[in-house]
Image: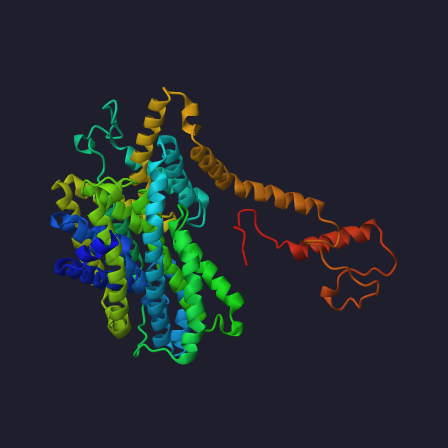
Length: 553
């Protein structure tokens, strides 16, 4: 099947779409604020007339290309184009300031190629096994897995779990708009007949990503100035190769499993890769000043997670990041039902898509190494012109979905919602997942109740469902459990233990140095103990106002 996929992906037209996808993906990855999710969302209406296989080959090229290109802007401008390239900026920009931008870009490109190739090979190996397992699951288990995906992704995103669940609630509410599939009763349509069919996912994706981001950047244009750092020809010396190849492999090992998990994504594995390389490096003193390992490892983890993300998307119909969510919406727009039967019903599309990942990965390496200086020049494009073009295509694409002016009103309202979410630090991904998975969760929930004649125990009558619900309870209760454990340890900590000052010698202090503590020349008494306890409290617990947020070092 994979060989047939290569035969399909290697046709001249599909190769053209693959080249177009990787070029677009790299370009949008380079441009700050424009990610692969937004690009795929913008191109959804444009590709309605394109054959599904060709369209998804282009989408996959955009996805991988966006992962490649995001490292360029992180290294050159210290401006991550994607949240997954934040870690790359730490060491990559330091290397660029030190005149080693070429080496940083090269190790990022080659590491991305190595990790992407290994990750795609793992996708080929593991996806059919996941499908065989998924086909054996019933409605209760599938319902539990989708709930776990929503809760786990929401819990690990953003600075606050409350904000993450607020975003999820908004997405589920948008997903409820329309007619009830069983009773035919209108839900949240507010007397507007045009809402009876629900809010189109394309309108939601374009509004939240494209319009919301454009409004956010416009609000900050006057305060942000970018400076482009010139880039020479990318090359790596023998020492750079020696210090990079192990981080590439370790980053791949971190990235693929996290990308495949429902709570995955690229942010966590890139951070873990950076921390690991810092501990294992023979040059730890260079970290924070431009260590090449700090670029090689996280970039490999970033691209390996991209291949891992496609595993649950193709095998289970579960997206674990924004781009996968938009691609899943594209499948549904073509009338293709995502899920375990996708490999059986659409084998040509699936295996051509997987084969195109190998082709696109090679094309990206050939494009990124010689064209890095060109991507740096793209950053000089004035942002007002850039985002004016984005707004034009967003409006045109939204109108093309249903040819209804009402969709433009929805675009504006949801775009303002996307702007407000960025303003208050609310993550966008849970909203998109809620819109896509909400109706599917409702469908599986009703199916489970129908099979059990309305008995709630029908939701837990499969072993997989029981295990998944236990994991959900652990995810939700773990922060509370750790808080209680820390409080208990703090109360039972012995004197001189955790959180206490070291014991002081029984010698009088001169009183000139305030850091010497309390004099203990004549034994101890209650007054001395009180003063000592107060001194300890003041030195271990910083004074803060009641409403100040806690600070973390």
